[in-house]
Length: 367
Ligand code: MLT
Image (cartoon, rainbow, N blue to C red):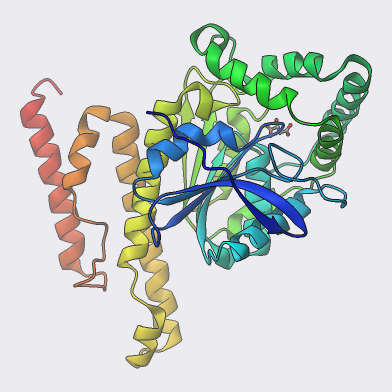
């Protein structure tokens, strides 16, 4: 059964914001930010996949879907502030963000300005670079074209860039849904957002300081934010993992929901396990350990955890047959009983990895 939108409303930054909110109270929160000119319903398949284990929120960025536009000029900075104020209003101290395209621009802006509010990022079909003069000009031409030829024609032109050519036959229902999302966005919001996208600042120079784990996803046939853009972000973010989705264009979550969701689920499980295993800072301080030890400990732990995350994601990505054994792995190290990284818990991790590999080989003698 598909996800049934629960379409809630809240006042944020003096405007009504519409959002879907599902999953258990107290579970780690994942916030999904849609692309342009779409709305929160583009995330329904991801809500469905995640809602058993996470509080999942998908909201309409101002001027999109059922959220108001407000009176201010649109900008990625303003969208970033709206996000933080939405988190405040919903009493969410920290969250993992997953943004597609414009949603990724908003996520990158938010983590740059409020790094302490986020536990992890998923950057899907997005880019850290600002618009080139040519792309700014294309946006201004798009505004002229909407004025002259209307939104339906704009929707038709956009769809050709948003989806991989094969998706028009293999996934025509999703194409129709995207057409509906574009056609129901008001002309004024289209103009305002096109201006906001054209004037957005680059965030590439800020990527090296991102401290949280990042999963980068991109459709192999994405022509708006192509795989090269994803590779370039991957090189700049230390703790990042890149996965390219075949047979998908710019809207990879709609075109290949199964593969997209698998990546998202595995990544969020790792992030969750990692946060559950982190000892409380205050507890360590009160036990008399000094701040220097804590930060060098955290650094080592972050490096190890990110390596383990990469091993696990690689298994999931390249050896789907093997990935079912991953559930038998211990939580990532360190665990609650032995919070410090010791030779013992490291070796228990590698032993268990070895044992699932042995089990896999026994069941798949040809490999
Ligand atoms: C989007 O999907 O959000 C847009 O394609 C972003 C853009 O045009 O830069």
